[in-house]
Length: 247
Image (cartoon, rainbow, N blue to C red):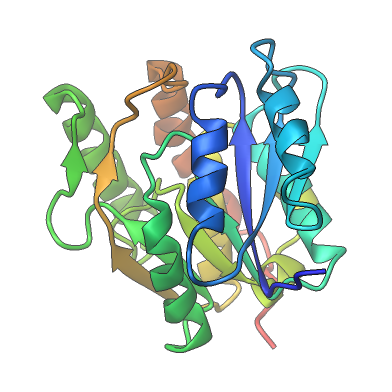
């Protein structure tokens, strides 16, 4: 058995064009990572490909298969709970479509394992705007959404909606995962906000975000709407909520 201290959680819905390539890219890194796929009943056969690859990568590649499209946030929560039931020390969020470069995983690991961060974020906006192949309207929407979230919440994070993240195990053990309410991309904001409220330290690692070349994006205006209006509710509720603290 190839034991690892790190597991990469990748939620999928209709990613058959990307899934084998992303799995092989992660497993091709010098550092040993395990992968957990959380598939929401992809009708294109994404889960079938993963199950076939499990024969090639036994005890390194895992899958949770869910019935129906249940949302990004609930997929990650399911993955977090699965990882916490094992011995992993570092738990990652990453997309399947190569918008997050697997080669950056060791950099996030270094930020947590060697540089003392509790939460490392692959950040598009900590050193300018590092986004490739997005329409300008979407770049501006994403950039100013993160600025807005930072202004409303006061959290010292430039890329508040980033989905490329490494958590120390203790962060996810401390946060009440059952109390996380958002299911879409606002989930990313809520997790970062809650982690900072619990006293955990954050480090943003600059990365280049590259828009997917294969498959279909799941982003739409309603997802940004959830983030924009949900963050006000998140801030107001925090005035009346006591957060568990880092030990």
